[in-house]
Amino acid sequence: MIWRENGRNIMKARKANRIIGLSDDRVRPNEGGERHDVTIANATPDDLAEIIDLDARITGFARADFWDELFRRRDTSDTLCVLVATGAGKIVGYALGEVRSWPVRAPPCGWLYAIGVDERYRLQKCGSTLMTELISRFKQSGVGVIRTVINMDDHLLMSFLRSFGMAAGPFVELEMNFPTNE
Amino acid sequence: MKLQQSTRYAIAAVIELASRPNEQVRAQELAETYRISQNHLVRILYALTKANIVSSARGPGGGFMFCGSAKRLTLYDIISLFEANWPNEEHRNLRADNELTQELSRVLHEVDRITWATLRSVTVQTIINNARRASATHPKSKILSQLS
Image 1 (spheres, rainbow over the protein chains, first blue to last red):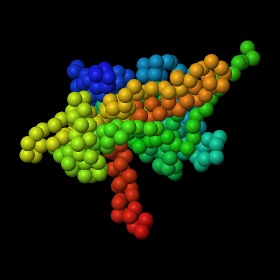
Image 2: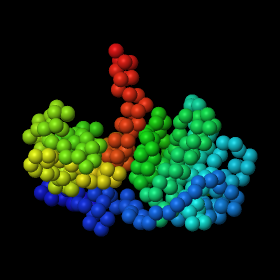
Image 3: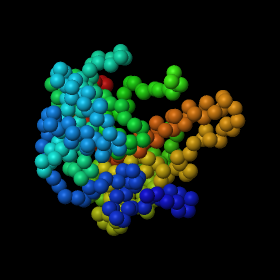
Image 4: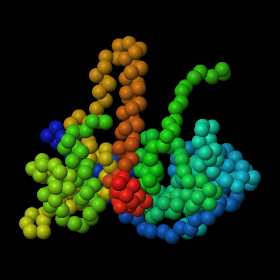
């Protein structure tokens, strides 16, 4: 929380959780919460419904078609990786990535498509473990670069990825709106 | 991006102190490390103390110590503490009364958005960790031998 005093911005510690200088959108629900054990494994077809549900809760929008298509494609792909973190018999996190080339002049690299962790399991290295495992899979596939595209306003996810050492690369996403023919 | 000298010193001081947790560091040592005016630095450190980012202790063995959350405190937080009227969008001063100035304003806003997003996502701990990773990958001696 930031407020002004004598013409200057002074940060005020959030008394409730003793977080200093933390914008509201970066408050983490499990701050100081209990710890849970999680295990990381490849997702199975039985996990699909739980992943879709968890992804919808984290991102705020359901995308069953997206996950259905990925699981179908995974059956014939050696480079598509869907990892899940399981805690107390439930799926509490997921990471999705693939080694592929890109329609720009760059060699194949590991793409991080999605990563998410249940709010109650954050700050327990669950996301870090998923990310580390995904990078390990990419290494095994012979690539040495991981890339992703994320929403610029998703500060929490961007902070997480930067904590791994990720930074702006040589490409930038550009887009444009145009009228459709409908 | 143009930052005031105080802001740059504040960032450097916070990162240095955060990299040495539970250690009281004297202002004189920090000033010598970064070759800056001790008086100026002390004023900055007291501003950081007021913001609960740094604590101070007087007397022998005293000094300044990081007391914030390095995993949460971002560059954006530190900069907004020291830069008056920041973040400001200077292009808003442009009179957007024609298409050209409107387009120029849009481009400058795009640059600002990228800058803010970057600063908001870089925590003090991330800087420390990345520096340590870089140091482990390219030890100083190795870099020096490459330069010589």
